[in-house]
Image (cartoon, rainbow, N blue to C red; front, side, top):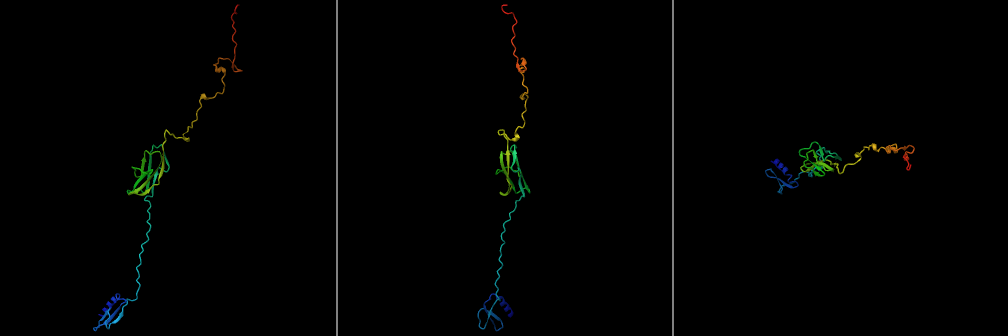
Length: 229
């Protein structure tokens, strides 16, 4: 019984730590404890042993937030292969074909839109489109991949030129000059010998070779009978 009381006292010691307890033994030999003074009781100072400073639990510090890693483009290659930069289409009737290339292939959840001079092109097929009435001048095209209205990736813009020759404004330049030299006809050939007067007069006049002039002849004398003979 006494042993049990000591055990109970030891268990209760933390609750009474630093307090005064009174101990006494009754006539039956039973030991009692009380926090109230009793006549003939022994004063006992309870202690829980050497005090130890409570060690606070280690504080938890969340890891520093890392900046989100920006994912790279979903396509390693997305470009316009035709037309090429500053390519000129001359007398093509306004026909220009735009072709794209993507690696890997465009996924089903992505939409490709072609822009001509900043405006979307209607009826654009996934990777190519043919313009049949492209106006003359310089134009710029680019393609954009979107998903749910958000831009995923786009190609570098490409500028090309459409040139159409017209009758009202024909082309000029060294390549269009006539390189054929005019041919000389027989009528334009210069003579090397002066024609004679006789030749110029049909050969009827008698020409003096020394002067190249016609010889003057005296009129013939009449041979008939004289008057009054």
